[in-house]
Length: 227
Image 1 (cartoon, helix red, strand yellow):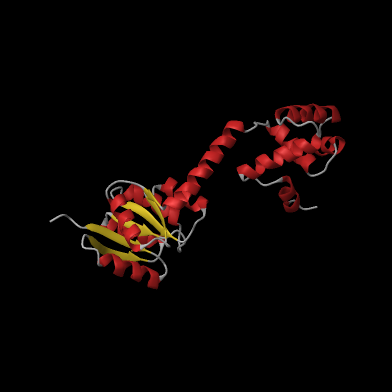
Image 2 (image 1 turned 45 degrees about the horizontal axis):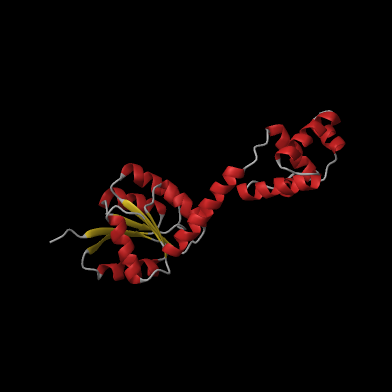
């Protein structure tokens, strides 16, 4: 008789967790070995019970991503699969980067969840297909951006951020302790790198790059700085 797939379930919503456990216990080749409700429980279950697959939610008490890293280190034989409502791409990337082998959304059907667990237990990775397409599209966008990313020096970045806040070359020079001629020199370099014909186009291109990179915009910086 083939060995059963041993499963741990960690979710801070008792009804949902118990419902998943009840459904999985009805699968002939599955065995639910333990349940928990927080990140610390996940690590404890992985170390003490060594399930083949550990189902974890993303949003639970404690550091879930830190728990995944701890499990990858302390119990490398345990394969972590996220079972979550979070469609946040950053959560998915963080979980997979930490060592999770699967990312499944809670809207998945019973048969799909069973298939995902079997795949992960067998050494494969599994991501809910529709969500996987979104992740791949975003990855392609980031790769495309990286190929076209304009590298500005620290001083060029500093100056274009001041200009983006509406400062004139003279005002930027006074603020940074530079000569106005030096500021004009750097702005010329920035416009050439960003293929901008004027200051407005340069600021627009810079803001577009900051948005893609997730960096604070100049407007945000201005709001954060006290007067």
